[in-house]
Image (tube, rainbow over all chains, first blue to last red; front, side, top):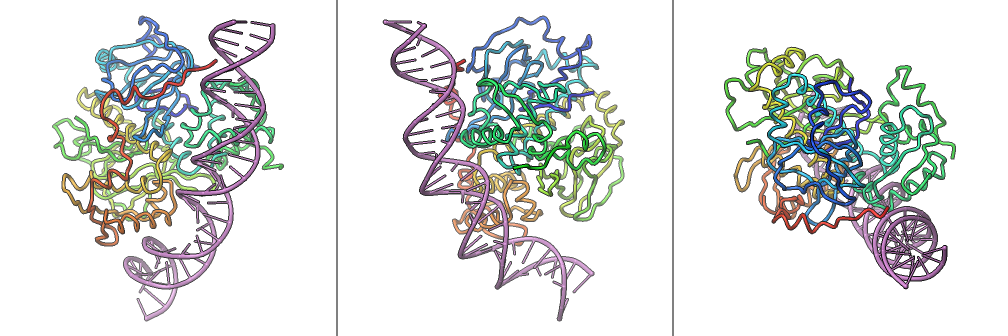
Amino acid sequence: MLSQTTMSQPHGAVRRFATVPPCPASLNSLFGGQPVETFEPGTAVFWEGDEARHVFEVVEGVLRVFRILSDGRRVITGFLYPGDLLGVSLKDQYLYTAEAVNRTKLRRYEHGRFQEEINRSPELRPQLFACLCDEMAAAQDQMVLLARKSAEERVASFLLLIARRLGGDERQPVIEIPMTRLDMADYLGLTIETVSRTMTRLTNCGVIAPSSRHALVVRKLGKLALLAGETDADDKDGAGGRAIQQAVWPN
Amino acid sequence: MLSQTTMSQPHGAVRRFATVPPCPASLNSLFGGQPVETFEPGTAVFWEGDEARHVFEVVEGVLRVFRILSDGRRVITGFLYPGDLLGVSLKDQYLYTAEAVNRTKLRRYEHGRFQEEINRSPELRPQLFACLCDEMAAAQDQMVLLARKSAEERVASFLLLIARRLGGDERQPVIEIPMTRLDMADYLGLTIETVSRTMTRLTNCGVIAPSSRHALVVRKLGKLALLAGETDADDKDGAGGRAIQQAVWPN
DNA sequence: TCCCGGTTGTTACAAACCGTCACATCTTTG
DNA sequence: CAAAGATGTGACGGTTTGTAACAACCGGGA
């Protein structure tokens, strides 16, 4: 029913099923009539603390959503892709900043009206509720990653997340990473050097292969899943076991 | 409007305003007629992967909610206190395990009926929605903590969270910590030794003072907030947000 | 087209923080 | 009362960080 490979998303930024075509009264259709706005790379859609006046739908491009500590430390709580919602919350202020990673197109919906529509439609409500649940599940995954995973597991988890979202079922998917190393580092709770070193190691192991500056090929998807320290590994049922059969660590 | 000092809670485990008396058609009233069940310390209410048949309300006691990686690493995604909900989700399986920390009393509600009630009542819906938003906000705080805060900041943040929730507005609140050091460690992404050492350091600094084995006095609440690295410190004005460097995409 | 400056990405090395191991102390449980 | 468990403390080591320096890349301008 719902996308299971949801990327971690911040509060009010919900990802919807990208593969399922929207039904007549889907959340997407709400934004259908709204004009499309374009945001250049590095441009903020809104800042943490701004009055929360609108809900947005990502039409094209990628956004980063983050908070910053007083001394400058930044934490990216999620990346948003086409089909995701941004700014869904009851708070009167945004709790985070949203910035365009690359050129991004959005549709805007007035906050109060969005609430009304949701409240009025018995079809939209469960959709939004489902999105929030998916969002919470993703947030939990991220907490597990940040609390207990090693640097290598974090990078592998991140690449796996993108690969599964973009690459479909290909065995050696080509994935694009529009964000910078700093974005990845701030999302994974690491430094850019550690991210860089880890990516190099994964390349040397043959797990991934660089394609262009912001794209790479996942050569060993199963091994990547192993390195990611997936809980699925102990899901002893047939499907998961077969998919992850790979050499343990040849080096 | 909503509790701002919400403790981080896992998916479907929502905390409601404990100080505000429940209105006639509040979420609490839903569980009013249900029998109270008691769980002894260390007892599981349900396990990750169990079929999600019920939603629970915490009446008394404290629960820990966690996930475990294949090699045994544990991550506690939240603690639940009286008034919190547990198991609110659309998934057909629980995504985490819930265990009683101390003796706990719960009320149970059948999952499908809970959905019905929510869907039917225009008063309950916004309440549940608000709870989910609070829950997401707490999850974000926890991601910030795990991604970028030092051991001392993590412990301070944790103590501050409990102090604010339990201690009201007292200047030197006495707070109870029913969970073990291992629970704290697995919640904060640290080891028990680091937690222990950090608590000792906070004691030596006069910030806290041990009361009993599972209770302590916060002697310097302000200093604790400073050590916690609160974002509030830089919430001076909107200019602060604008000072953030916008890295312009080079491609 | 070529050159050139600024940003991003990579690698090496030392340092810091936290984890690991060990053991003593204290509490709780049977 | 004994045994098991939880907590506190120290020494040591490992993973990650921080600081560099350098290379690669992109964009702008002549």
